[in-house]
Length: 204
Image 1 (tube, rainbow, N blue to C red):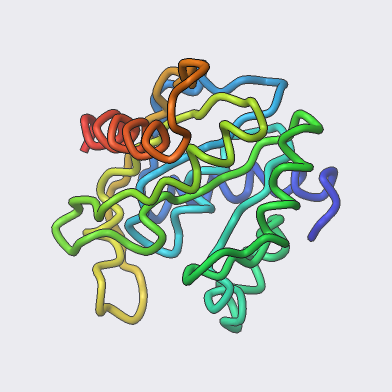
Image 2 (image 1 turned 180 degrees about the vertical axis):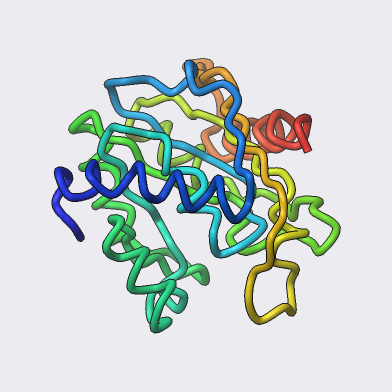
């Protein structure tokens, strides 16, 4: 990936592109923690989501991204330069999870899209997988829910290239995880993933 100082230089230009082409507006940036481990979990509408989401965030972040997407010539290369790690969507991927846990325990931020793939053409979300919550529990970090709205109209499923449009990115308050001592981890992760989906879906 690119050194952080290079990313800091490029960030204003990425923000400018986001504004010019998609009139991207941000709400709730004050909810982004400046320090400490955190998982940033958002809905997934287009392959531009990582760029829209990360452009205003000044702290170092990493992404868990579909391993096949990272093999694409342009988007995949750009995502790797931003700090994306490949994740196999089918089955478990211990290497990607170990990297994420190490980064989170070092007070880093990791972006995860819990749907595991792009949502529906009308902008509604697919079912959330519980991986983001389970990683957050194991690392002992909160989750920052993020809603991306309007991306489905900019780059609908089935369209080859994005078009001009308007996008809004909403950063919600931190979601803390506090399971009871005797609570089943898998059941708690499923329950909290449903809550997370409701929070993110509330701004669509």
